Length: 408
Image (cartoon, rainbow, N blue to C red; front, side):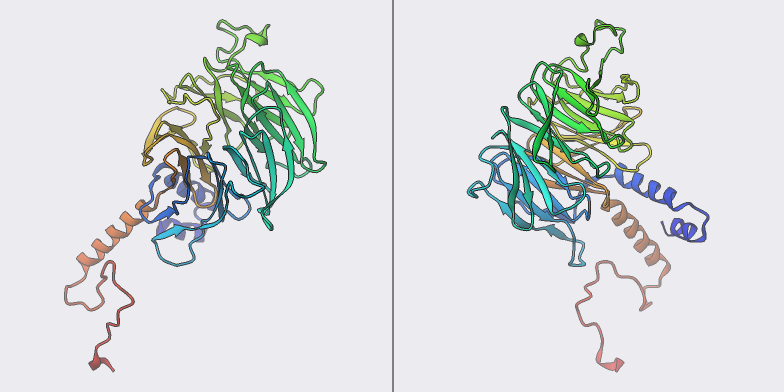
């Protein structure tokens, strides 16, 4: 690491290459953090998590009992052992709170002063963090499984909403009105995601086993219906109505950070990789991933790492895969019950997960630094004579006065 930093300083190594290498190393070596945790404040399962994209300071969580929790992720103590404290809570007793399970939470992509929540009470709420009250409220005919707001551009402020009716609904945050009803699915829509590359491209996934890509600017908004057989199986190119993405409900979507690929998860226990340019199934074999829930599963990809990684909940574990090859890198085990959601922190390069065990866990690569430090201490100890007063003492208590009276 020190040699690498010196090469960057001298201009031998490109800084972007250094960031990519370090990010990749951390993303590959995530383990349950030994030094950091999140205050245990939930009284029901955790369904959704999100980190504010502006500062990366606050973590928001939504739970099955309708409560919303806010945690401060910054460590101001200067000590390695740190617990992210609960800084605010909106309980079900609050008159503005959701009355049923919260299925999705999201920070406003351009300002941490706003966040959005939705759930089984058929409502989407836009909250003002300065007073912790809803600034706007939208009601729908069906239960809301997920909503998503694009982080690309600032011209449009559209929120996509996936509900238990067979329409994806778009809401304009500026005008406070419903702008579009995207009709194409024949059953409940479980997931919706905006492309991080094209601000007008939306992907929706449904209980009809389909994934549809939309261009919301066009009169005929449907761009394509993704076909797992690429037109060579029992579905055909001529009849897009028979195209299916999975042999079961499609309950999770996630774009890669460049927007060139889309990952989907289904109740057929499969994850698939799609080319968003031509809609082709890349036929990457990720193996079996247990995902039998009839609700949306939140999963995420690592930012910047090369090769790219995806973190996917599977029962009580989180599987880590290389996106292009489907190779399973590792299995993150630590939850005592089913994992519902995970989100990758783009600044800290660590992972947060929540599950039915009511815990929010932090997965970091700090153990790599710990082992490197331990090796450094051992090497220094071997070089230093036991009588040398300058020897390095691991875990020294710096608060104890070690000055003797004869050294005045």
